[in-house]
Image 1 (cartoon, chains in turn cyan, orange, brown):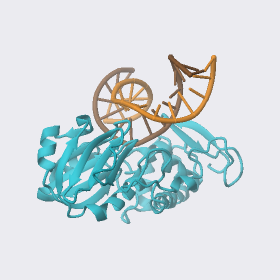
Image 2 (cartoon, rainbow, N blue to C red):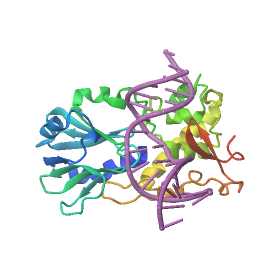
Image 3 (cartoon, chains in turn green, red, orange):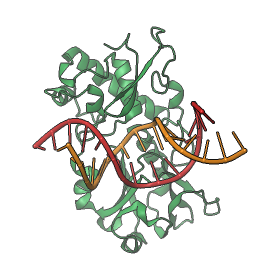
Length: 274
DNA sequence: ACAATTACCTGTATGC
DNA sequence: TGCATACAGGTAATTG
């Protein structure tokens, strides 16, 4: 599932091919994936726009277009955003195809159709959908241990749920949340406010480490995720707890547990995570 | 005001 | 073999 490292990888792999390309036309196969504006307006507005740059905020990918427009995408669970040749076969669940002035195509494919597209003016970016209440970027150098401590302070919810709350920290999903808690040696059920400064420091470092490792490995491809060129990542080969329920902990050998926290499956080692 | 639950979707795995 | 059921999880909407 695309989390921060996956969206970052999609952004990085698409960028060299999209900068200064003009969107010649757009074909919408499933209008429902476009939240705003209505599909006709979307088509009319985006046609002839130039892609100036690509960005990311949390799990949102952002295309900065000419004339002050922004195309925002959220891949949710099964979304794929790939650049292909125009004669590549159209995959099932292809909902939107953007054809560029060099005839290559940017295709929005999403089996479960949870993903969403938004086209807004630049000045509306920070007030669109979930972007308007997104927490800080965990990999931003300005994000310090002190900020994580403030986020945890006074919150009685399990630390796992705090990590998943996009309004508190942006971009962490179920896979990386489990991984960073294991790296930090912190039990995911612990109330966020109960973490000592020492534990918060470890979690801060583990957060950076696991997210940066995900980016270095081009993302985690467990099922659907691929990068902008359609390639799978390799980070699934380096996961220490996610998807390893009942298998031995790589540190102590005890069987890993799988429980539900806030309705999400949670993988951890009750021996190594206190 | 806030927390918990449900809706949105479809493919895959499991049980009988 | 076939059918029903559970599960995957990010976010918005709804309910409590």
